[in-house]
Amino acid sequence: MATYFNEEFETLPRPALEALQLTRLRNALERVYATVPFYRASFDMAGIRPGDVKSLEDLQRLPFTTKQDMRDSYPYGLFAAPLEEIVRIHASSGTTGKPTVVGYTHKDIEVWSELMARSFVAAGAHRGDIIHNAYGYGLFTGGLGAHYGAERLGASVIPISGGNTRRQIMIMQDFGSTVLTCTPSYSLFMAEEARAEGVDIRDLKLRVGIFGAEPWSEAMRGEIEDKLNLDAIDIYGLSEIMGPGVAIECIEAKHGLHIWEDHFIPEIINPETGELLPVGETGELVITTITKQGIPLIRYRTRDVTSLTYEPCVCGRSHARITRMSGRSDDMIIVRGVNVFPSQIESVLVGIEGVEPHYLLIVDRHDNLDTLEVQVEVDERLFSDEVKVLQSLARRIEKEIKDMLGVTCKAKLVEPRTIQRSEGKAQRVIDKRKL
Image (cartoon, rainbow, N blue to C red):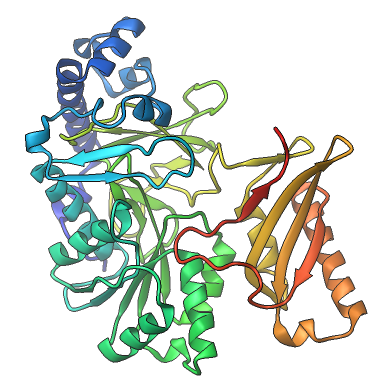
Protein backbone atom coordinates (compact mmCIF):
# COMPACT_ATOMS: atom_id res chain seq x y z
CA MET A 1 0.00 0.00 0.00
CA ALA A 2 1.34 3.43 -0.95
CA THR A 3 2.33 5.94 1.70
CA TYR A 4 2.01 9.70 1.30
CA PHE A 5 3.43 12.84 2.87
CA ASN A 6 0.25 14.85 2.24
CA GLU A 7 -2.42 12.34 1.31
CA GLU A 8 -5.24 14.88 0.99
CA PHE A 9 -3.55 16.84 -1.78
CA GLU A 10 -1.63 13.97 -3.39
CA THR A 11 -4.85 12.00 -3.97
CA LEU A 12 -7.26 14.86 -4.73
CA PRO A 13 -9.97 13.68 -7.17
CA ARG A 14 -9.38 15.12 -10.64
CA PRO A 15 -12.35 17.57 -10.62
CA ALA A 16 -11.28 19.01 -7.26
CA LEU A 17 -7.66 19.25 -8.40
CA GLU A 18 -8.61 21.12 -11.58
CA ALA A 19 -10.91 23.48 -9.66
CA LEU A 20 -8.03 24.28 -7.30
CA GLN A 21 -5.71 24.82 -10.27
CA LEU A 22 -8.10 27.31 -11.88
CA THR A 23 -8.51 29.32 -8.68
CA ARG A 24 -4.77 29.45 -8.10
CA LEU A 25 -4.05 30.21 -11.78
CA ARG A 26 -6.37 33.20 -11.82
CA ASN A 27 -4.80 34.53 -8.61
CA ALA A 28 -1.32 34.10 -10.09
CA LEU A 29 -2.29 35.95 -13.27
CA GLU A 30 -3.75 38.86 -11.32
CA ARG A 31 -0.56 39.00 -9.24
CA VAL A 32 1.91 39.09 -12.12
CA TYR A 33 -0.20 41.54 -14.12
CA ALA A 34 -0.23 43.92 -11.17
CA THR A 35 3.40 43.57 -10.07
CA VAL A 36 5.58 42.54 -13.04
CA PRO A 37 5.88 45.07 -15.90
CA PHE A 38 7.08 42.31 -18.26
CA TYR A 39 3.85 40.36 -17.86
CA ARG A 40 1.62 43.42 -18.06
CA ALA A 41 3.26 44.34 -21.39
CA SER A 42 3.24 40.73 -22.60
CA PHE A 43 -0.45 40.19 -21.82
CA ASP A 44 -1.42 43.57 -23.27
CA MET A 45 0.44 42.78 -26.49
CA ALA A 46 -1.42 39.46 -26.70
CA GLY A 47 -4.71 41.26 -26.10
CA ILE A 48 -5.63 39.34 -22.98
CA ARG A 49 -6.26 40.30 -19.36
CA PRO A 50 -6.22 38.01 -16.32
CA GLY A 51 -9.99 38.25 -16.06
CA ASP A 52 -10.34 36.75 -19.54
CA VAL A 53 -9.10 33.40 -18.25
CA LYS A 54 -12.29 31.57 -17.32
CA SER A 55 -11.08 27.97 -17.66
CA LEU A 56 -7.87 25.95 -17.69
CA GLU A 57 -8.23 25.71 -21.48
CA ASP A 58 -7.83 29.49 -21.66
CA LEU A 59 -4.25 29.12 -20.44
CA GLN A 60 -3.10 28.41 -24.00
CA ARG A 61 -4.22 31.91 -25.01
CA LEU A 62 -1.42 33.39 -22.90
CA PRO A 63 2.07 34.09 -24.28
CA PHE A 64 5.07 31.97 -23.36
CA THR A 65 7.91 32.94 -21.04
CA THR A 66 11.41 31.88 -22.09
CA LYS A 67 14.84 31.66 -20.51
CA GLN A 68 15.87 34.61 -22.67
CA ASP A 69 13.06 36.66 -21.10
CA MET A 70 14.56 35.85 -17.71
CA ARG A 71 18.05 36.85 -18.86
CA ASP A 72 16.69 40.07 -20.36
CA SER A 73 15.10 40.84 -16.97
CA TYR A 74 18.33 40.10 -15.05
CA PRO A 75 18.55 40.11 -12.14
CA TYR A 76 15.23 40.98 -10.49
CA GLY A 77 12.98 42.18 -13.31
CA LEU A 78 10.55 39.24 -13.12
CA PHE A 79 10.23 39.24 -9.32
CA ALA A 80 6.64 39.69 -8.18
CA ALA A 81 7.62 40.32 -4.55
CA PRO A 82 9.74 43.19 -3.20
CA LEU A 83 13.32 42.30 -2.28
CA GLU A 84 12.62 42.72 1.43
CA GLU A 85 10.27 39.71 1.16
CA ILE A 86 12.83 37.56 -0.71
CA VAL A 87 14.66 35.28 1.74
CA ARG A 88 16.65 33.17 -0.74
CA ILE A 89 18.19 33.81 -4.17
CA HIS A 90 19.39 31.05 -6.49
CA ALA A 91 20.69 31.23 -10.04
CA SER A 92 20.97 28.75 -12.88
CA SER A 93 24.24 27.11 -13.84
CA GLY A 94 23.91 28.09 -17.47
CA THR A 95 27.11 28.01 -19.53
CA THR A 96 26.29 30.91 -21.84
CA GLY A 97 24.94 34.38 -21.22
CA LYS A 98 23.78 35.72 -17.88
CA PRO A 99 22.35 33.25 -15.36
CA THR A 100 18.64 33.06 -14.70
CA VAL A 101 17.92 34.39 -11.23
CA VAL A 102 15.12 33.10 -8.99
CA GLY A 103 13.92 34.44 -5.66
CA TYR A 104 11.95 32.75 -2.89
CA THR A 105 9.74 34.15 -0.16
CA HIS A 106 9.29 32.32 3.16
CA LYS A 107 6.13 30.78 1.72
CA ASP A 108 7.99 29.63 -1.41
CA ILE A 109 10.59 27.87 0.74
CA GLU A 110 7.81 26.18 2.74
CA VAL A 111 6.12 24.95 -0.44
CA TRP A 112 9.40 23.75 -1.93
CA SER A 113 10.25 21.88 1.27
CA GLU A 114 6.87 20.17 1.28
CA LEU A 115 7.06 19.16 -2.37
CA MET A 116 10.52 17.70 -1.83
CA ALA A 117 9.24 15.84 1.25
CA ARG A 118 6.36 14.51 -0.88
CA SER A 119 8.90 13.47 -3.47
CA PHE A 120 11.06 11.63 -0.96
CA VAL A 121 8.07 9.67 0.33
CA ALA A 122 6.92 8.87 -3.22
CA ALA A 123 10.41 7.50 -3.88
CA GLY A 124 10.18 5.20 -0.87
CA ALA A 125 12.06 7.28 1.71
CA HIS A 126 10.75 7.74 5.25
CA ARG A 127 11.37 9.56 8.50
CA GLY A 128 13.97 7.06 9.75
CA ASP A 129 16.23 7.33 6.69
CA ILE A 130 19.75 8.75 6.55
CA ILE A 131 19.86 10.78 3.34
CA HIS A 132 23.29 11.21 1.74
CA ASN A 133 22.82 14.43 -0.23
CA ALA A 134 25.54 14.66 -2.88
CA TYR A 135 23.82 17.33 -4.95
CA GLY A 136 25.80 20.56 -5.10
CA TYR A 137 25.10 23.29 -2.57
CA GLY A 138 25.26 26.95 -3.52
CA LEU A 139 23.51 28.87 -6.29
CA PHE A 140 22.51 25.53 -7.81
CA THR A 141 19.12 24.55 -6.35
CA GLY A 142 19.78 20.81 -6.05
CA GLY A 143 21.60 20.62 -2.73
CA LEU A 144 19.47 22.95 -0.63
CA GLY A 145 16.24 21.76 -2.26
CA ALA A 146 16.89 18.16 -1.28
CA HIS A 147 18.24 19.26 2.11
CA TYR A 148 15.15 21.20 3.17
CA GLY A 149 12.88 18.43 1.89
CA ALA A 150 14.75 15.81 3.92
CA GLU A 151 14.48 17.93 7.04
CA ARG A 152 10.78 18.56 6.39
CA LEU A 153 10.30 14.80 6.13
CA GLY A 154 12.07 14.37 9.44
CA ALA A 155 14.87 12.22 8.03
CA SER A 156 18.55 12.65 8.89
CA VAL A 157 20.38 14.49 6.12
CA ILE A 158 24.12 14.42 5.43
CA PRO A 159 24.89 17.67 3.54
CA ILE A 160 28.01 16.35 1.85
CA SER A 161 27.51 18.08 -1.53
CA GLY A 162 29.58 16.98 -4.54
CA GLY A 163 33.24 16.11 -4.87
CA ASN A 164 35.82 14.18 -2.84
CA THR A 165 34.33 10.87 -3.88
CA ARG A 166 36.56 8.71 -1.70
CA ARG A 167 35.40 10.63 1.35
CA GLN A 168 31.79 10.22 0.21
CA ILE A 169 32.22 6.45 0.12
CA MET A 170 33.76 6.44 3.60
CA ILE A 171 30.90 8.55 4.95
CA MET A 172 28.27 6.26 3.40
CA GLN A 173 29.99 3.28 5.00
CA ASP A 174 30.50 4.82 8.44
CA PHE A 175 27.24 6.79 8.73
CA GLY A 176 24.99 4.05 7.37
CA SER A 177 23.43 6.12 4.56
CA THR A 178 20.18 4.60 3.27
CA VAL A 179 19.15 7.11 0.58
CA LEU A 180 21.49 8.62 -2.03
CA THR A 181 20.71 11.83 -3.93
CA CYS A 182 22.96 12.88 -6.83
CA THR A 183 23.14 12.84 -10.62
CA PRO A 184 22.80 9.37 -12.18
CA SER A 185 26.20 9.58 -13.85
CA TYR A 186 27.84 10.44 -10.53
CA SER A 187 26.26 7.42 -8.85
CA LEU A 188 28.02 5.15 -11.37
CA PHE A 189 31.24 7.07 -10.82
CA MET A 190 30.85 6.44 -7.08
CA ALA A 191 30.41 2.73 -7.70
CA GLU A 192 33.51 2.76 -9.90
CA GLU A 193 35.58 4.62 -7.30
CA ALA A 194 34.35 2.33 -4.52
CA ARG A 195 35.46 -0.68 -6.50
CA ALA A 196 38.90 0.88 -7.01
CA GLU A 197 39.09 1.35 -3.23
CA GLY A 198 38.22 -2.29 -2.65
CA VAL A 199 34.71 -1.47 -1.45
CA ASP A 200 31.64 -3.22 -2.85
CA ILE A 201 29.07 -0.42 -2.81
CA ARG A 202 26.36 -3.06 -3.09
CA ASP A 203 27.14 -4.07 0.49
CA LEU A 204 26.31 -0.65 1.94
CA LYS A 205 22.93 0.15 3.50
CA LEU A 206 21.76 2.19 0.50
CA ARG A 207 18.17 1.30 -0.33
CA VAL A 208 16.94 4.12 -2.58
CA GLY A 209 18.70 6.43 -5.02
CA ILE A 210 16.98 9.65 -6.17
CA PHE A 211 18.68 10.81 -9.33
CA GLY A 212 18.13 13.87 -11.51
CA ALA A 213 19.65 17.02 -13.07
CA GLU A 214 20.51 15.21 -16.33
CA PRO A 215 18.65 12.94 -18.78
CA TRP A 216 19.17 9.21 -18.29
CA SER A 217 17.76 6.09 -19.86
CA GLU A 218 15.86 3.07 -18.60
CA ALA A 219 18.90 0.99 -19.48
CA MET A 220 21.05 3.22 -17.27
CA ARG A 221 18.57 2.67 -14.44
CA GLY A 222 19.20 -1.06 -14.72
CA GLU A 223 22.95 -0.45 -14.66
CA ILE A 224 22.69 1.72 -11.53
CA GLU A 225 20.38 -0.66 -9.71
CA ASP A 226 22.68 -3.56 -10.47
CA LYS A 227 25.89 -1.80 -9.45
CA LEU A 228 24.54 -0.05 -6.33
CA ASN A 229 21.87 -2.55 -5.21
CA LEU A 230 19.11 0.01 -4.71
CA ASP A 231 15.89 1.30 -6.27
CA ALA A 232 16.81 4.09 -8.71
CA ILE A 233 14.13 6.80 -8.87
CA ASP A 234 13.99 9.63 -11.39
CA ILE A 235 13.35 13.15 -10.03
CA TYR A 236 12.73 16.27 -12.12
CA GLY A 237 13.07 19.94 -11.43
CA LEU A 238 14.55 23.13 -12.77
CA SER A 239 15.73 26.26 -11.04
CA GLU A 240 13.41 28.56 -12.93
CA ILE A 241 10.29 26.72 -11.76
CA MET A 242 11.41 25.83 -8.22
CA GLY A 243 14.35 23.42 -8.17
CA PRO A 244 14.19 19.66 -7.59
CA GLY A 245 10.84 18.21 -6.61
CA VAL A 246 8.66 19.50 -9.46
CA ALA A 247 7.99 15.86 -10.40
CA ILE A 248 9.13 12.41 -9.32
CA GLU A 249 8.54 8.73 -10.00
CA CYS A 250 6.73 6.70 -7.36
CA ILE A 251 8.49 3.58 -6.17
CA GLU A 252 5.34 1.53 -6.72
CA ALA A 253 5.30 2.04 -10.50
CA LYS A 254 8.59 3.65 -11.61
CA HIS A 255 6.63 4.58 -14.71
CA GLY A 256 6.37 8.31 -15.29
CA LEU A 257 7.02 11.18 -12.91
CA HIS A 258 4.11 12.64 -10.94
CA ILE A 259 4.11 16.41 -11.40
CA TRP A 260 2.62 18.21 -8.39
CA GLU A 261 -0.34 19.77 -10.14
CA ASP A 262 -1.66 21.66 -7.14
CA HIS A 263 1.35 23.95 -7.67
CA PHE A 264 2.22 23.57 -11.38
CA ILE A 265 0.17 23.28 -14.59
CA PRO A 266 1.97 21.27 -17.28
CA GLU A 267 1.40 21.49 -21.04
CA ILE A 268 3.12 19.78 -23.98
CA ILE A 269 3.73 21.86 -27.10
CA ASN A 270 5.28 21.44 -30.52
CA PRO A 271 8.67 23.13 -29.97
CA GLU A 272 8.71 24.46 -33.53
CA THR A 273 5.21 25.95 -33.72
CA GLY A 274 4.25 26.45 -30.07
CA GLU A 275 1.02 24.58 -30.75
CA LEU A 276 -0.52 22.63 -27.86
CA LEU A 277 -0.21 18.89 -28.51
CA PRO A 278 -2.81 16.22 -27.64
CA VAL A 279 -2.30 14.29 -24.41
CA GLY A 280 0.17 11.45 -24.94
CA GLU A 281 2.16 13.09 -27.75
CA THR A 282 5.83 13.91 -27.22
CA GLY A 283 6.95 17.52 -27.28
CA GLU A 284 8.35 20.33 -25.16
CA LEU A 285 7.20 20.67 -21.57
CA VAL A 286 5.70 24.02 -20.61
CA ILE A 287 5.02 24.79 -16.94
CA THR A 288 2.96 27.49 -15.26
CA THR A 289 3.58 28.09 -11.56
CA ILE A 290 0.35 28.82 -9.68
CA THR A 291 1.50 29.32 -6.07
CA LYS A 292 4.95 30.94 -6.32
CA GLN A 293 5.25 34.37 -4.80
CA GLY A 294 8.84 35.41 -5.49
CA ILE A 295 9.00 34.81 -9.24
CA PRO A 296 5.84 33.27 -10.71
CA LEU A 297 6.31 32.10 -14.29
CA ILE A 298 3.50 31.84 -16.82
CA ARG A 299 3.80 29.19 -19.56
CA TYR A 300 7.55 28.79 -19.10
CA ARG A 301 9.19 26.87 -21.95
CA THR A 302 11.44 24.36 -20.21
CA ARG A 303 12.97 22.98 -23.46
CA ASP A 304 12.70 19.52 -21.88
CA VAL A 305 11.24 16.88 -24.17
CA THR A 306 8.62 14.54 -22.69
CA SER A 307 4.95 13.53 -22.86
CA LEU A 308 2.06 13.70 -20.42
CA THR A 309 -0.45 11.12 -19.18
CA TYR A 310 -3.46 11.38 -16.89
CA GLU A 311 -3.91 7.62 -16.63
CA PRO A 312 -4.48 6.44 -13.02
CA CYS A 313 -1.36 5.21 -11.24
CA VAL A 314 -1.15 2.14 -9.01
CA CYS A 315 0.19 4.35 -6.19
CA GLY A 316 -3.12 6.21 -5.92
CA ARG A 317 -1.72 9.67 -6.61
CA SER A 318 -4.06 11.64 -8.87
CA HIS A 319 -1.44 13.99 -10.31
CA ALA A 320 -0.49 13.69 -13.98
CA ARG A 321 2.74 11.97 -14.95
CA ILE A 322 5.41 13.06 -17.39
CA THR A 323 7.55 10.44 -19.09
CA ARG A 324 11.29 10.22 -18.52
CA MET A 325 13.01 13.16 -20.24
CA SER A 326 14.48 12.12 -23.59
CA GLY A 327 16.63 15.23 -23.72
CA ARG A 328 16.16 18.93 -24.36
CA SER A 329 14.85 20.50 -27.50
CA ASP A 330 17.78 22.91 -27.43
CA ASP A 331 20.38 20.26 -26.47
CA MET A 332 19.34 18.01 -29.29
CA ILE A 333 22.00 17.54 -31.95
CA ILE A 334 21.11 17.23 -35.61
CA VAL A 335 23.45 15.03 -37.63
CA ARG A 336 22.75 14.99 -41.38
CA GLY A 337 19.13 15.86 -40.71
CA VAL A 338 18.65 13.26 -37.99
CA ASN A 339 17.60 14.43 -34.52
CA VAL A 340 19.79 12.74 -31.90
CA PHE A 341 19.58 12.86 -28.11
CA PRO A 342 22.52 11.57 -26.03
CA SER A 343 20.11 9.38 -24.04
CA GLN A 344 19.27 7.48 -27.24
CA ILE A 345 22.93 6.69 -27.82
CA GLU A 346 23.27 5.74 -24.17
CA SER A 347 20.41 3.24 -24.37
CA VAL A 348 22.28 1.45 -27.18
CA LEU A 349 25.65 1.46 -25.42
CA VAL A 350 24.53 0.13 -22.03
CA GLY A 351 22.89 -2.83 -23.76
CA ILE A 352 26.22 -4.02 -25.20
CA GLU A 353 28.34 -6.32 -23.05
CA GLY A 354 31.83 -5.09 -22.34
CA VAL A 355 30.93 -1.41 -22.77
CA GLU A 356 31.14 0.93 -19.77
CA PRO A 357 28.44 3.62 -19.22
CA HIS A 358 30.89 6.46 -19.94
CA TYR A 359 30.78 8.02 -23.38
CA LEU A 360 31.28 11.22 -25.34
CA LEU A 361 29.68 12.30 -28.61
CA ILE A 362 31.87 14.45 -30.85
CA VAL A 363 30.08 16.14 -33.74
CA ASP A 364 32.14 17.76 -36.50
CA ARG A 365 31.86 18.72 -40.17
CA HIS A 366 34.22 17.62 -42.94
CA ASP A 367 33.75 18.47 -46.62
CA ASN A 368 30.34 19.98 -45.74
CA LEU A 369 29.15 16.70 -44.23
CA ASP A 370 28.36 16.15 -40.55
CA THR A 371 30.30 13.46 -38.74
CA LEU A 372 29.53 11.78 -35.42
CA GLU A 373 32.19 10.05 -33.36
CA VAL A 374 31.08 8.02 -30.35
CA GLN A 375 33.88 7.62 -27.86
CA VAL A 376 33.09 4.93 -25.31
CA GLU A 377 35.06 3.19 -22.61
CA VAL A 378 35.28 -0.58 -22.67
CA ASP A 379 35.84 -3.08 -19.90
CA GLU A 380 39.47 -3.36 -18.82
CA ARG A 381 39.62 -7.06 -19.61
CA LEU A 382 38.18 -6.51 -23.05
CA PHE A 383 40.47 -3.59 -23.84
CA SER A 384 43.50 -5.79 -23.34
CA ASP A 385 42.07 -8.30 -25.84
CA GLU A 386 43.30 -8.70 -29.40
CA VAL A 387 42.66 -6.01 -31.98
CA LYS A 388 40.12 -7.95 -34.03
CA VAL A 389 37.87 -8.35 -30.97
CA LEU A 390 37.87 -4.58 -30.43
CA GLN A 391 37.25 -3.95 -34.13
CA SER A 392 34.28 -6.29 -34.01
CA LEU A 393 32.86 -4.48 -30.98
CA ALA A 394 33.28 -1.09 -32.66
CA ARG A 395 31.44 -2.33 -35.76
CA ARG A 396 28.63 -3.67 -33.60
CA ILE A 397 28.21 -0.32 -31.84
CA GLU A 398 28.15 1.50 -35.18
CA LYS A 399 25.56 -0.94 -36.57
CA GLU A 400 23.25 -0.78 -33.57
CA ILE A 401 23.30 3.03 -33.52
CA LYS A 402 22.63 3.06 -37.24
CA ASP A 403 19.77 0.59 -36.86
CA MET A 404 18.16 2.49 -34.01
CA LEU A 405 18.69 6.12 -35.03
CA GLY A 406 19.37 5.96 -38.75
CA VAL A 407 22.59 7.93 -38.34
CA THR A 408 26.07 6.80 -39.33
CA CYS A 409 28.76 7.17 -36.72
CA LYS A 410 32.33 6.11 -36.00
CA ALA A 411 32.82 4.24 -32.74
CA LYS A 412 36.11 4.90 -30.97
CA LEU A 413 36.88 2.52 -28.12
CA VAL A 414 38.98 4.04 -25.36
CA GLU A 415 40.63 2.71 -22.23
CA PRO A 416 38.74 2.61 -18.94
CA ARG A 417 38.68 5.90 -16.98
CA THR A 418 39.95 8.04 -19.87
CA ILE A 419 36.71 9.96 -20.48
CA GLN A 420 36.52 12.90 -18.10
CA ARG A 421 34.26 12.28 -15.10
CA SER A 422 31.84 14.81 -13.70
CA GLU A 423 30.57 15.26 -10.17
CA GLY A 424 27.67 17.30 -11.52
CA LYS A 425 26.02 17.08 -14.91
CA ALA A 426 27.96 14.87 -17.27
CA GLN A 427 29.14 16.51 -20.49
CA ARG A 428 27.96 14.18 -23.23
CA VAL A 429 28.38 16.26 -26.41
CA ILE A 430 31.18 18.28 -28.00
CA ASP A 431 29.97 20.02 -31.14
CA LYS A 432 32.89 21.30 -33.20
CA ARG A 433 30.80 22.49 -36.12
CA LYS A 434 30.62 26.19 -36.95
CA LEU A 435 26.84 26.35 -37.08
